[in-house]
Length: 112
Image (cartoon, rainbow, N blue to C red; front, side, top):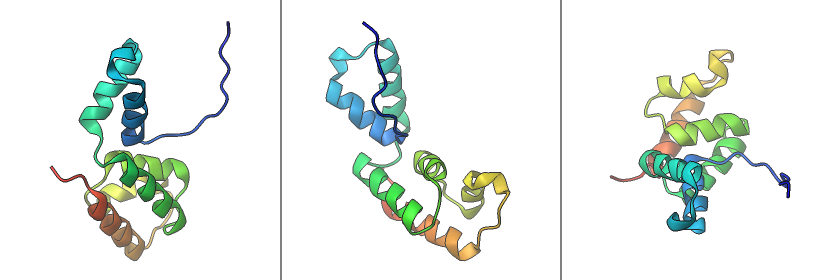
C-alpha cells in the first residue's frame, strides 16, 4: 500500500512536539522519537504561542512564512540576530520593525 501526501504545511518546532505528543511516545517510530527528543529540547515557546507568533509576524510585520517559522524556531534575542533570518540581509528592514519583532518575541519567550 503506497502513501500519498494529502497536505503539506511547514511547522514550528513547538508545533512538531505537540503533533508527536498526540501520537503518544510509546507509538513513535525511531525517526519520530528523534524528532520528539529534538523538539522537546529546542522548543523555545509553547505551541499555542508559536502559532500566534507566526500569524503576527506574517500579518503585522509582513514576513513570509518561511522567515516567520525560522524566527519562531530560533527566537532570536537581538536585532542583529533577527536580521540574519530576513532574506540573508538582501533587503533593508527598518529598525522600528526589528524592534517591534523583538518586543513580540520577548512577550512569547518561554519562561525557564
